[in-house]
Image 1 (tube, rainbow, N blue to C red):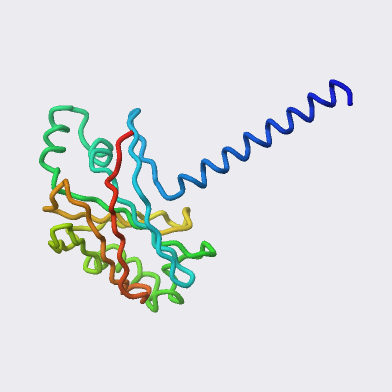
Image 2: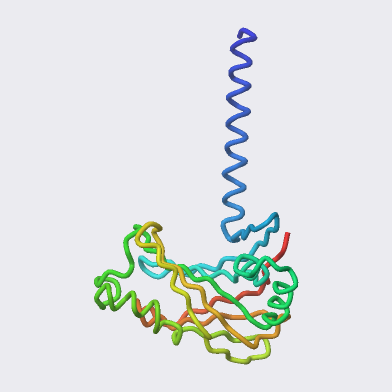
Length: 195
């Protein structure tokens, strides 16, 4: 084998090993979601339940990330917002069809598309609650339905909960009235971690 052929084979093997390392890294982190903002990064555990054709994925959103993203530039105001919000929790939940179909179609919800959108926007908050370590049950305080107008293959909600001790872990309980898949639990035994 010539030196030139040897270098080509060596280069090919090197590229193949780098490629496989990248794939392993992606696979290892698929259970976590990263939140990046202003050179800050948080990592949060993703919990997924799959029923029939539908996946439900819940992730606790780091409160500091959410406030930094939405708060004023003034650091004093931002710090006071962080302090005032210390007992709040935000959970992101995504619904996705295994074939990337629009989940709000009547064939999946038994409602018209318009009724499904209204349900996701205004009524779904009654389907969520959180149970804390100390067995307090907290109703959902509000929901934000992120409309993506069929650009992304999933539907996403942000759920807001108040009066939770910041040191406690939580369990999200969802009674799926929209798709009819019953009650499911998402237990967040890990808190979001700032890297």
